[in-house]
Amino acid sequence: MKPIQRHAAASTFYHLAGCSLSDCACSGLACFAARADDAERWQRATRQVPPVYCLGQCYAGPSDAGHDTRPHIGVHGRRSVLLNNVLAGGVRDLARYRARGGGAARLKAQRMTPSQLIGLVESSGLRGRGGAGFPAGRKWQLTAEQRARVKYLVVNADEGDPGAFSDRFLLEDDPFCLLEAAAIAARAVGATKGYIYLRKEYPQAARVVSAALLEARAADWFGPSFDLELVMGEGSYLCGEETALLNALEGRRPEARLRPPQVTEQGLFGAPTLVHNVETLCAIPWIVNHGASAYAALGFSQSRGTKLLSLNSLFRRPGLYEVEFGVALSDVVERLGGGLRRGALKGLMVGGPLAGIVPPALLSTRLGYEEMQAIDCAVGHGGVIAFADDTSLLDIAAQVFRFGARESCGKCTPCHLGAPRLAELLHEAKNGGRIDRSDYTALVDALAATSLCGHGRGLAEFARSVQRHFGGEIEACFD
Image (cartoon, rainbow, N blue to C red; front, top):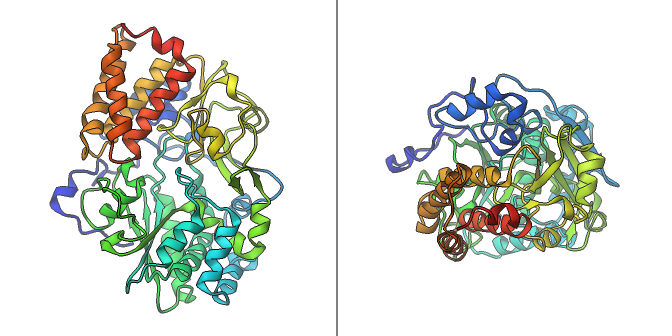
């Protein structure tokens, strides 16, 4: 595990630096949605300093580090791309991984040229699963065509969206799939060095991946021209934004960078860099083994393949599910989750706190990047948080903006000052105050138009989505 030599100005940025998580409670949105199920634990989470916003236990909210159970794991589609080893209870040693067919994709990729690998990924239709949905093959091509002596591969394992725990179980239960995928991607784009940036809130994943890296190196999986190291984060939601993550790896403050240049041109230490999240990469061995057309045959519309969904504890069957794109959200709620175990559904937050909230009237919407965008919501990372009717939209909005304000990197003024002000306005409205419409609209418009990265823009999109779909509750707060 590689320690980061941080600049002194960066050391104060991380709110979990030097903190033990052994007795912490979670105050993330999934646990907020379930706060009535254990009021004492939720109160402990809200009083805790520093706060922890997701432990990856959203299926058992409100959660804490001292109590964890294994969630339900299920596959609802024609084929499983990602969860076979997770369904088997986890495959954490190389011999068993090979016995189950693992490693074959790496050997097959060694017989292919980089351009063949890139073409395979492009033809598969794989898009980034971290939220933006950018075509993976296009990103590989952009990185590969850069002429540079050194290129980097960075695995974004900073799964910070409250409500999501898919990467956690891929890391803990199928680490060699990720390492195999990294070796294939490095070959395709010409990367000579790689880093896995893992959030501190996943200590078991750190232990599993560290052990897997030792085995992979001993088996010469990476060869003489590439190596992969594990780096631990210290608590920052914004490190999920790829340029902030690269700054963190460089030991600088993890603030978002201006673009262009894109990271495929000038990324880590100024070199061309391919950045993918865990779920995106873990699809690569399956695509190499089964072919691009087999992967593209799954899913629908412009969203091909499968997606992992993390269902929170308000469902009767919370857990981790692999679905094909195109499934209706109503099927996610009723067929996968079994409906809510208490109360009526208020709304469904899909894709994290910077996505909108789907009202019950729109549950016929099918899961797809463009389809979710059309209703001012998002696929995002695939966290699915159900809110029951014991939580008002004003409560949810205030909680989202408190989180957004806390996790702003502070580099751009609209987010640094606007997010806290919006959180303050919503908090006052919860307590009976009134919101000046013009001030609120101006703040949201500024976030949308001038924020440096997706954090501020996402908060604006959330605000607009809530106004569109739950306008009556929000309008009642305006002067």
